[in-house]
Length: 384
Image (tube, rainbow, N blue to C red):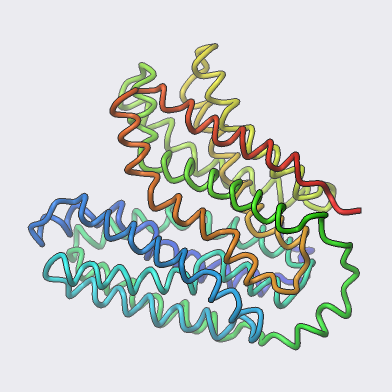
């Protein structure tokens, strides 16, 4: 698949470091929240609240991180993210109560702003300009396995060594795997040279409106993605299936994401990112309609949702780059994605309350958000 990719080494390095970063931060609470809470003597919801705070911190710092990458390139920022995430994990392993746990997650949130997809996409845009689209897709394809690798590994470490030691193992992976790979990334040249050698088309008309619409699109997408990640098995049970069927169907989301990203990688030369983003926004509501009105199996909904989610992740990097060009991409990316990070922080609680009160009717909220995102994308016109 990557054989004809001219930036294979760069893509592979960032794919590995992004896998480590996501598995040791975003996907960590799903496995360690309960054992953390049990040993610290606090409710597990408090651990998830600390994680939500980390997402808020990440959203607030995103534009600043993007500006730094625009000016100096992303290598030093990504190397620093390994150190900051490792520090957060060390603090987590030493936590003795709510205050120290909150501090650990605040530091982790800073590292997430510096080292997750937004920073990686800005780094690729700074290095490759519009040619970064293929590498962005490749990185998301590889890092799509972060939960597939991270959840079983963290579960095994917790069972064998305890959650504190599990955090320290992830520290080692940051320092001895992620950091050296990020250190070997190329340094970015002057942004003027990148812009001078590009054949960028003009940006879309009313660029501020386009940025606002994209901010809504990705906020809606991230809200739905996080809500489904937290509540999908329970949601499917509300439609009448058994727990075993719901869990088996929910497990198909990951493979569907990877399959959609493979399709995007294979077809990206033939379609503008606007078209794939529009398609991505309709798959979740399509699945919901088929599930509710025609009795489609739960697995079908999971596959459609997962495919749309996988494509949306790619669009969050490729669409702003294609519409606005590489100059100022990091700063712009930070502003566009900041509402999405806030939506991520609120999604588990808000959707959980709605699901508790209304059952599967909550699915219509997520469907409405995604249809609104599709309309927003239809308003944005492809530049001539």
